[in-house]
Image (cartoon, rainbow, N blue to C red; front, side):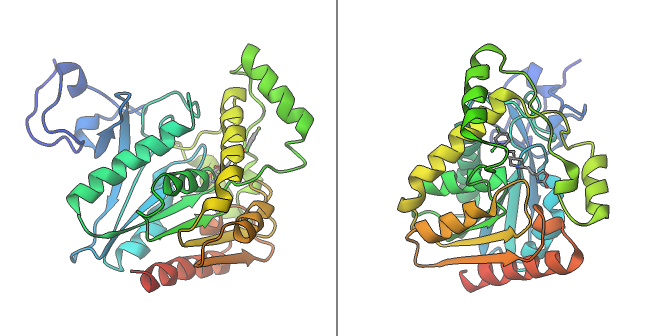
Length: 310
Ligand SMILES: O=C1N[C@]2(CO1)C[C@H](C(=O)N1CCC(COc3ccc(F)cc3Cl)CC1)C2
């Protein structure tokens, strides 16, 4: 029997709009009314995470996770930033983690950006006047770039951890790109292959964590999803020459999932006066879950970069 509850369900609204929503559950079976969440403009429930400092926050930071993973993988980084009296927030994108939506399926990449802007607007209402920074990893880096591009004067800085900016030349040849686009019309749900966990990190422990995390999606990248990524890479290529906001690029030299040349290209092409690129020798894709030395350096770099721009 559905129970109507008054008060904030942790979402954007107060009361449950209908009895049906009272029993809405995450893909893992938890009740959204008992979890922090927002409801996007398509009516999909997105699971949120908040890292609230004990003292009055001096800034806001939104973390945007990548493809097939979820916001819980950023707890260590978020806590480090929270300890700088900064309010950190995130949500699991549609089709990811504890949010609704078919796993790693998206009708249009713009949905990710729209949902992030909705969450950002919600947080700006709650904490008016604070600087807002974005942190994006991999596909989340592409989301961060396109989100900042929609509001070029709204963000104090954008930090990109191995962002998806350009295609891996060996895996995305023009022929393969053409075939993927063609296949999308006839068999959009065909799998192209899944992310190789061994490309995630040189840390065996982190590879195991990635494999064993039930909130990660380990299935195949569908053609329709791949085409959305291809379109996104093309969109980013177009806007790089117009980027003026401050950014920090961090990329592993041995990244096999997102080509480091994308970061070099953004650093060389974007006219931002405040831009930094740091390359981590021999490091793989997930710098915040790499060998301890690398991850420690990355955390310090992010912490210093934000504090300097508060
Ligand atoms: O900690 C983490 N990091 C994660 C996982 O867990 C890595 C993952 C992530 O976002 N990407 C890695 C894979 C990449 C695939 O890209 C394509 C695939 C087919 C295609 F046709 C065109 C493209 Cl562009 C997208 C970006 C997030």
